Image (tube, rainbow, N blue to C red):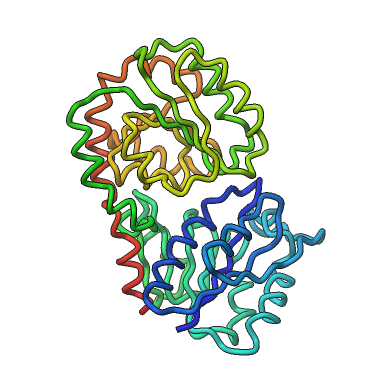
Length: 349
């Protein structure tokens, strides 16, 4: 079986789309599939990371001419027509079994133009804000329903909706029970901070400023995780040295599940890592760092699976951790169990 992924990463859109596709690609490869990626060379791309995981990547140049039809059209680095034509040039030699698309700037216009290149099409989405011509649609967000896509996909399309289908790497399922067991102690010694792979608005730096005036346990250890393409990485490394607690910055880690499992509390953005923290029952003070995170953040906050706050309320919630940590972690652990990627795989093979 041959599959192609069309997904991008950039400073603007972050790394989450490529990272979840990469997790799925690894699972497919382990099951005998031949995988390739098609990516535009945006600033902050993850092309080298994809290749380092053993996958071929076809690179597309970033162009000046853009569409304005969709809310996220500016993320594409080309018009939909040009992007489709670029992909056709790559895919026309041999019809692929599955084309998997994870991009907010692409819709049915692009999908129809590429129809001759694939047997079946899978769309990965979070927004339910545009039409798709697909065979399978995955929206892994808690609180989403099939009704949200009722008029956006063909009646024949198979819908995989909800956090049951969260595309998490196998190590999260592996660490789940260990993580849940160690939370019975209700101690707070390790704090993990991760505001996404790029953190363009330097929310990490603002959190560090708040930590300088926060009364935490004296023996607390703080770990900050960032991507190497994060534009404020160097300033974060400098500011961490001002903290009165033992602190470190880790870059492009490959053991995030282990770090989360051994953390007692996290401060994080409301993006793709939300499902990783939920799987491990990691109590999280969560911030909305992009408007498209609003839906899942509000839904999870409503069931006490996260502690949704504004940046100015981080101090108060950290200092009063004992009042919410246990119940929030328990609620989070019920959102997803780490097996979602297996459920999605069953629909393709």
